[in-house]
Image (tube, rainbow, N blue to C red; front, top):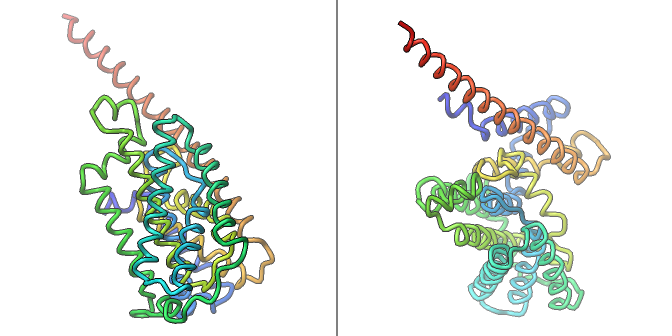
Length: 334
């Protein structure tokens, strides 16, 4: 119980609950069961994007091509489904596209030695250009009603899509906590030099993080098509900030090595609810502004807390050495 209360995810979840209660006190309609379920179901795309991004951030890197990769996967799958291709083929094409994009990012990072922020920024521009070429700059519309209806199917009021996203998050949590390779992500992100000395395959681990993230982005793109019903050339634009903010809000440190997919999913729920909260508060503020401000505040607080933790550890080591030295001198006295 003590570990649970001290977990970063617990504080993030408590923050979301307190915020929901405060908004409910201002406008009780916000806490209506149908609104809470709608908020939960609308967070499915952000949940998958944040979970995929968490793999990359925990491994010590950053990805700003999130929205572009999701948009390309959505455009490819939507056009194939619209043109009558079997859904299984469209799904496979989206997944392969996401995996290829993740692999390119990972290889560019580890073999070309390009910083992840520069590598993914470049691929984001390239991928966005590919979307325009692929779609001819036009919207992908007229998605079959059968495919769009999938997003409306629910169990206990929660959409099948969210149950699927939750299952993917749980699978990712088990990978990170139970599998040896899964624990490598945090080890590499925490201290890459020590990880190398311990024989951890750093290159493979970081490339794998991008590949897994690309897979999550692809699934998010598939769900995006079903929920929205069309894809524009700018689909997913700005989602990278929301995905990263969701991770940080959920306790994933941008310094790497700290965090979990559960926290990222909690942060995604908040990111998806910002727009609805503003509506119920009759606010004219833009949710992107709120997201940006929160991202800056949380990152600053995380950096200060991390620095404080480092200083505390240094003082404890110094005190331990001082006590040890004093004890040794006392022992030599007659």
